[in-house]
Image (cartoon, rainbow, N blue to C red; front, side):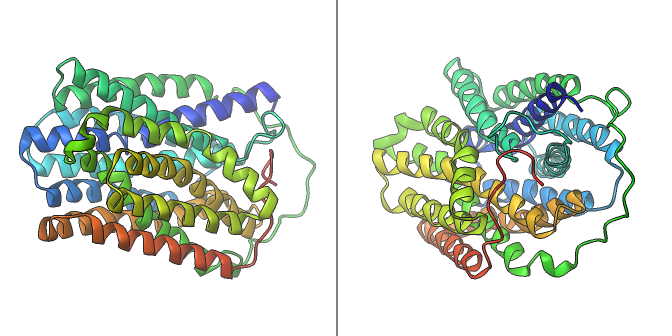
Length: 396
């Protein structure tokens, strides 16, 4: 594969992740306050809708763990991305909870397939992109999608658009990204991989090489980040002193997420992947606590920057660390197993937080619980052997 082809694969991965994750999953956060105002939803209902998306994400990750030929990754990626796009746009079709739950479930299912397929394509590219570029650079698409969708929602809302308009506009942007991915990621027949000298088949790595503690830490991270990621904009809107900051808070999250993969990859190369994972979890815990105990303009900005500046980087560190432990074998299965653990944690978070909010009238205790989960994830990662540093380019 030529260098330009590898760069195109990375571009396609970025576009796919931006559409399915940055928009398909996370656009719900800035749209949620508009839905609450327009439909009179409770926080428990809002949390249930978010959890439906994460339940779909969990199931999608489990299904994506099934063996599939590398040649099928592009078609799986495009079909899943089309499903994510359609489920996003169709959120504007009706006002029933049943439809919201079904569409967000299907959107989560699709986004997991996109995530695993795009990650496997980028991780397994025969030739890496520019020297010094982190292996998980495609995950910058999460921040790009968050920032773009936040600006889109703010602009559409300022122009008088209701929550339906916001979902439709998000779906159109996802459609544009889908077309871009179709162009950037070539089919296997267009750019065949050069034949490699025959070699004895490598045995599958033992299961012990992917420690249960690492899988558990990744699931705790999923629970720890998601409550703030779901309700941060709602916190801003319901706090009169800072309500005017609502249009920029989610943009800040996305903007901080864009360089986070490079930042935490650099940390991983200096101190090791798992120590960097632990450090990022502790930094994110500070932001989670700040979002509910320092509810001022400065505190919310800090929470937004620390959330955006860590959660994508932690995602990259966890996946690369797991792949290192698996010795580079069966990339799709390794990524899917970690993604399923992550999905389980983030599925529980919003419903737990929404139910507790309706009972206590506050997100303080759910958020403190989330911060505790992040601290525990950091402790589990520290107890594991470092397992090497992040690669700067090719993943093996």
